[in-house]
Length: 93
Image (cartoon, rainbow, N blue to C red; front, side, top):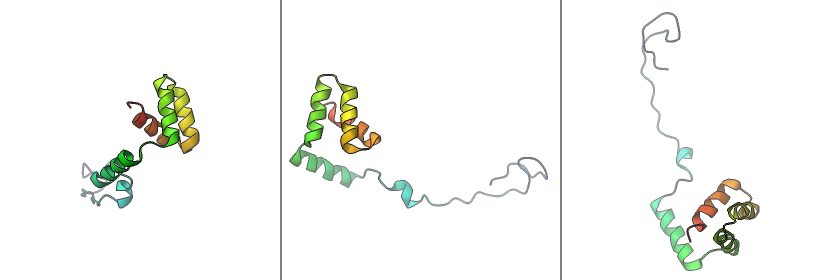
């Protein structure tokens, strides 16, 4: 804990010390999108196209059924955060 004032009492009591700065842990970086991963995913998307459930979600989005599309994708993906990501990816198309 970095001390601001060399005081004997109070919130900042004790002698001045410098904070020990540690390297960021690997688990903090895990899951972050890299250039290579993005390239590979884009290549697979270009070759394979969309999954059937993604195509159905796109149809729902075309007729302005955003809430229904999110509910549908949440059922398929079984995770709300990923469902929102899928909706965002498929909506502009």
